[in-house]
Length: 167
Image (cartoon, rainbow, N blue to C red; front, side, top):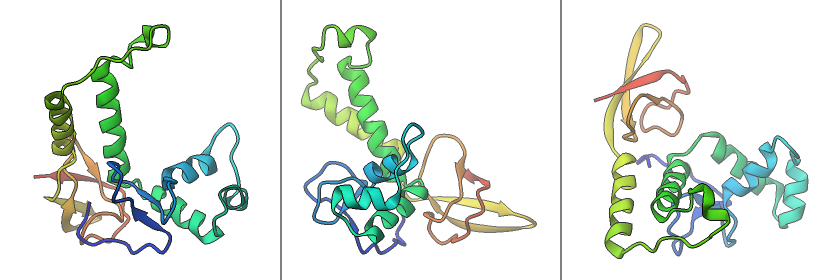
């Protein structure tokens, strides 16, 4: 994550969780959960409905949606970690739903998966973004392949959405 962080009134990282993404303060509700209900293609819900269902202030729901709209790297990292664990344990196997018995992973295997995911999302790393005829540099998360410049990046502050070079 960037060293310049946004201050949230209603969101925080849960220190008791292995997940890095933000939760609603004092609750075990992922910001991503609220966002998913708001953005649902099948049955999108209004901010007011979500706030009422979770007994949250409307501002808390708006803050969660705004946070997720920035496509925070910690959500992508949490997702990648879960996907890697599911793949390693056989939960992605098509027959898993008929014979649900995941392969047990050793502590060493879990540590390797965790380390591999951490390395894929390691920060900081220098990058530069070209916008129009001028350049601005900032720190971005280290991902394989091109990275887009968004507000969550350090120093840049521009929401230009152009692809940057990681070097």
